[in-house]
Length: 175
Image (cartoon, rainbow, N blue to C red; front, side, top):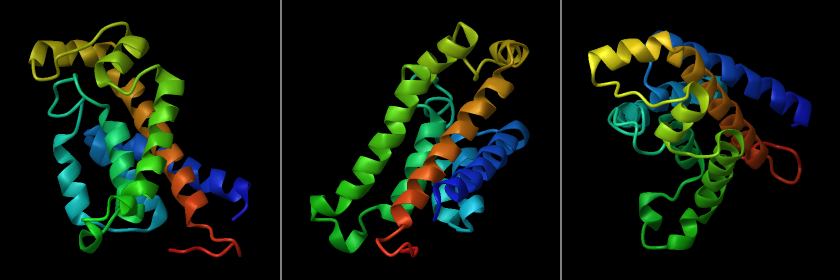
């Protein structure tokens, strides 16, 4: 697939994921849904499993950004080690390296992969989204706009990584 075509498809993932974040929230799920919908893949179990990973895991703001985790789940779903290969750590290496690439993109863009650090960079402070008063403050600070772009950027990069890796030497998809 030509790089231009990959960029076009990845841009669709950006908008899908961004719009999901604005209307549904849940950065891990919205990233995952944007990627999977763009690629035409369905996985209810993985989608459901991503539900607790928003705002640095469990709305704590203290863990890894949910948008990064949603992308990592998508990469793992496609390139991850299967249960039958569980005892062979080398079977997981491809997904490790691809997720590391997504992680590096977060470091390059935001200086961190931690939700609280990304919030500080984009909004100047962190918010406790479990506190109704702070949730309202976060919305007034434009959190939805900021986070929806983080989600969109993660979905875009994830799709770029997946499509690039799906190509074999003859240019056909492995998928």
